[in-house]
Length: 163
Image 1 (cartoon, one colour):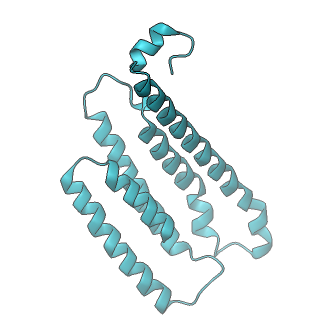
Image 2 (spheres, one colour):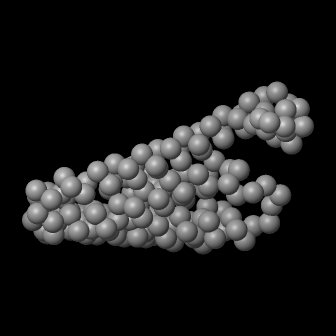
Image 3 (cartoon, rainbow, N blue to C red):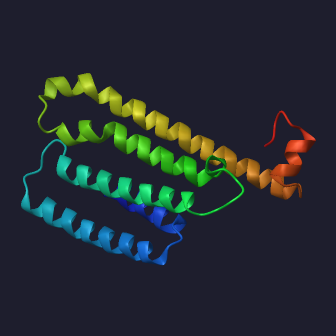
């Protein structure tokens, strides 16, 4: 639930459309109510896959809307030059890669979980790599703005290291 709240809040911050911000807030509130109801009415298992599956689908939808919004916005820079793109890509890769494992973990024998659980670690590592790219882009942007040079000026200053 904390992961859902943090991911959806981050997406809510970077989305520009007011209507979709309201949708995110409403759906998130309904999801939190559902989670509370679910935990009080069901027997606790090793891993509750229903809330995780719902969370993944919602964050996946929010992330795809962000990408849709960015594609429809005309700009000079490529979308992959922004740190937000790499964070959203990290969300998408992590959730898509671990979706089925998290969804079916209740159906798998406990002996067999260890055989497949490493896949979630791989996708978590990829997510963290994408987050690192996002942070490094942000740091490079901060350095170029502190020197008074734009990325365009930095490219011509040193074309082999534009950032």
